[in-house]
Image (cartoon, rainbow, N blue to C red; front, side):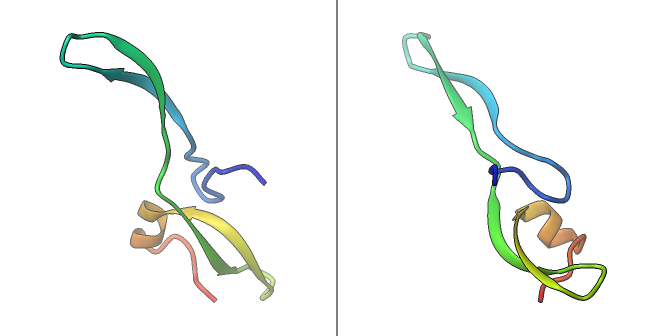
Amino acid sequence: MSRVCSVCNKGKLSGNLVSHSNRKTPRQYSANLQKVKVKNADGTVSSEYVCARCLKSGKVERA
């Protein structure tokens, strides 16, 4: 199970950590993923990773 949103496929992004002297080191930005129990279309309940934006907008129905 990878750490991506099961609704919108949001995952990790890569970027740079920039110091005061403007040196750049690679880093990764993680999505704000929450492990929630989701009610599926057929009525079953499964545990999935969902990002905070999808939870807030009501794209998933919590069990």
